[in-house]
Image (cartoon, rainbow, N blue to C red; front, side, top):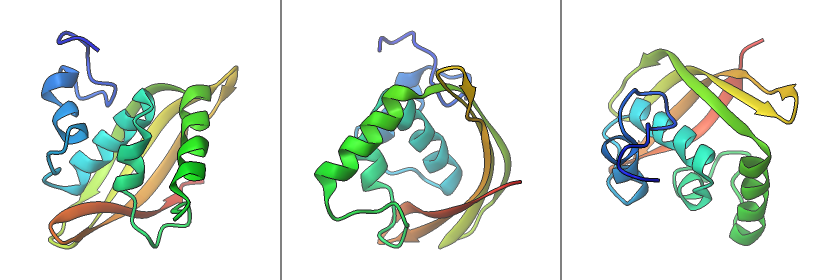
Length: 135
């Protein structure tokens, strides 16, 4: 991506000024920023970032990082990330929720989903713990 590429998280900012610093190691200051940077990482196939920001209690978490990485890469490659809308953010010091709609396509299939995600802060780092899909 070049300096003039819009960030896939739909922030209306350029990638290098938006999510790239987090993908390069800067810690997101809150759950909403982590949510955006994770969506962007999925869109760009940065699966190490997804794994590193997933809480060990998450159902998708795996100690077999190579297999987990393969699964995440397949998902990222087969999915078109068309947009992200943050619907609600309930901040907190150690726990927060972010409700969002991710506009996705897989082939001709609409994979759009709305989720209420829970994030926890441990040792100064926000992590994605789990989420509940809206019906």
